[in-house]
Image (cartoon, rainbow, N blue to C red):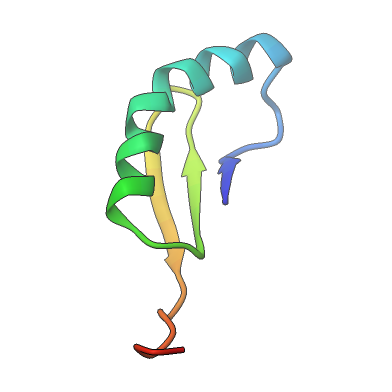
Length: 59
């Protein structure tokens, strides 16, 4: 799950941050299997915050 790191973004700021973050979001999705939490900053940076344990093989 991706979320904005602060709740005080305007709609325009969210759109800009999301647009800038999209390449990093794609990389994060390719590199890490869900579930995980990642924050998107005002500047479009993506920071992995929590990665949950992966299920055992064969589950």
